[in-house]
Length: 284
Picture 1 (cartoon, rainbow, N blue to C red):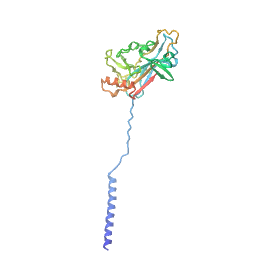
Picture 2 (cartoon, helix red, strand yellow):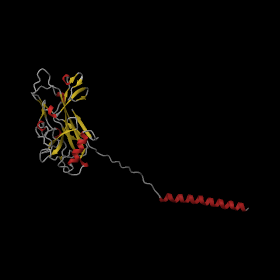
Picture 3 (spheres, one colour):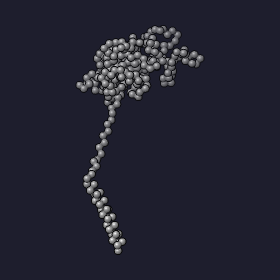
Picture 4 (cartoon, rainbow, N blue to C red):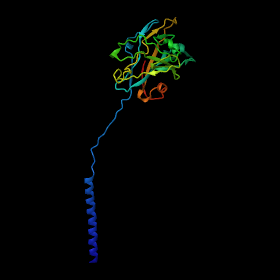
C-alpha cells in the first residue's frame, strides 16, 4: 500500500511538471512576435565610359596617299548611369611589318612587334609616327610633358549637343609603361611645362545641371585629323600601313579628396599599365 501511495505521488508530480511546461510554453507564445521580412538591396552605379569618334568613318576611309588628310576625333563620354569620373586617353602607334623588318626570318634588332588580329605590326614611338603623319594639335607636343594640347577644329555642334567644356584641354603626360604608350590627361592647367598641375575635370552624365555646373558629359576630341606627310619620299616602295590605337581610361571621381591630383594621376597610370581592373575601352 505504501508503494502504491508513492507511485501516486510520483505520478502526480510528473503530471504537474508536464502541465507546468505546457503552461509556460503557452505564456511565451503570447509574449513574443516575429515581423515579416523586409529586404533592402542597394545596387551600385559603377563607372562606365565610351570612346567615340563622331566624324570618323572607318568603312569610308580609303587607302591613303602622302598628303591625304582624314577625320579622326577620339573623345570620351560618360556611360549611361555612370558615376562621375576623371579620365585619361592613351595613344599607341603601329606600322605594319614588311619583309625589310626581318633578317634570316627573325625580327631585326631594335624593333618590337605586336600581333594585332592575325598580323604582325611594328611598335612605333610617337616621334617615329610623326615622321609619317601628323595629328592636328598634338604633333608638336613630343617630349614636352605638361604641355597643353591646343583645342583646334573642335566643333561645338557634335552629336547629341553634348555639354563641352570651355578653356579646357588635354594635357600631355608623356610615355607610360614600356610599350610606347603615350598618355593625355583631361583637365585644366594654369601653366605649361613638366611641373604644371592638372586640374582634372569630371566627366558626368548630370553635367550642365545646377547640381554639377562645372562637369562635362564628354571631353573635347584629343585631335580631329590625321594628315599624312609628303616626306619621306617612298621611292620604289609602298607607303607604310599604320594604325593609331586610342584608349580611354576612367577612375571614380568620388574616391578622391579635393586637390588629390597626384593620386588621380597615379591611379590612372596604374590602370593604364594593366595593374588595376577598372574601365578601359579601346578603339583602333
